[in-house]
Length: 263
Image 1 (cartoon, rainbow, N blue to C red):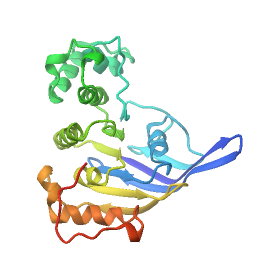
Image 2: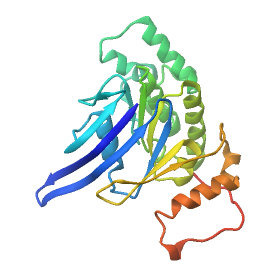
Image 3: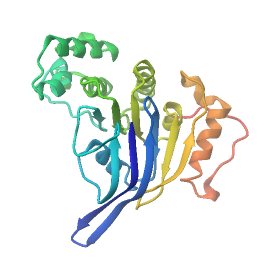
């Protein structure tokens, strides 16, 4: 569904070029959930913008469903850290925005929006405005809006990072439930190692800038995963393995007993 080959990007600044990504090669299969982990500034968000067609690479190629990415397309849904809802539009009208912008105001698109709001637990808030919702509820609206045009590929840039820990756990499990129902392809960015392991089929670890993929780690845990999974020895082993990429050897604290991780 998504493939990059030798993807590189450099930014021009007043002080010269900054190489953000170098020779990134990755693939996301149809129906696969893949997460990108990496240190701040390694180009994770830049990679997502390239996949979304919001910016163009310096070199290399990127394809979605076998076609070169030339710009934003209907096959791609994007969710950012903040849902960026329009404050003057109701919840329902915010979800309808992707279809309204392409001139689709049919009863079918409205029915789909209502179904999606029911899917994320907000069917009773269709006429509310964003400022009447909690942060978690706003993010749910953002998820519904992302799904409105039924994209085949979902690109998610730390969508739960700004939420409190309990709300984040809840929405992480909700995202897994929605993904297991529709099995869309997902490229998900997070700084949370436990969140990456809980959600993913595979975790791609990126290096410091210029970012490149240094490990492709397959998560071999049964689904559906729950909060109890966080204390499973296999889950703890996976998080400890991935954490070695980001922790100095002296800072690593071995554990003989699995402990419940925090998202």
